[in-house]
Length: 126
Image (cartoon, rainbow, N blue to C red; front, side, top):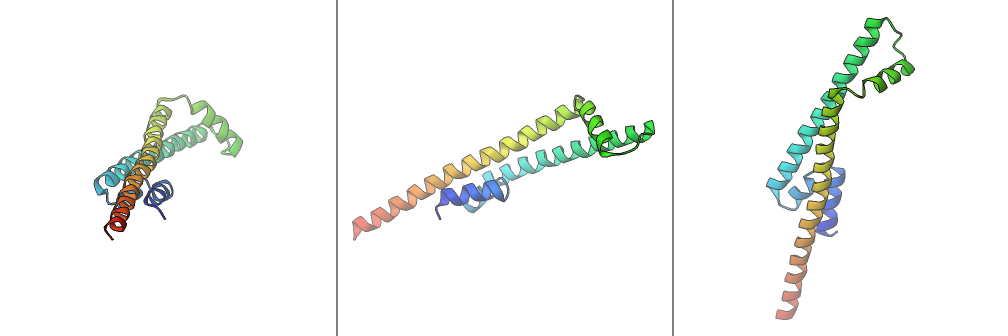
């Protein structure tokens, strides 16, 4: 398996930065992982906070907590400032993941070219 493919698959399906770590770019891998982890954690925090607020509002009104009521309350709440926070943190998460995939591919291509050149040099020497 080529280094480029290995980097893409690991960064795409394991976690952002895994491809860089396997391709020995530890600092980059750690940064991609850290930014993705923190922004993902902020996304989950925003979602849970919004869900708690919605459920508290439903209980305070005395409404039945049923799926249709939760859905209508969620639609009404989707214009609050906390959803902006969620959207920004999700955008950061998505961009980190995407950049990690592209960067792992680029690093892998460079390593593949270096290995191919080294193999060609060995053939020429013989």
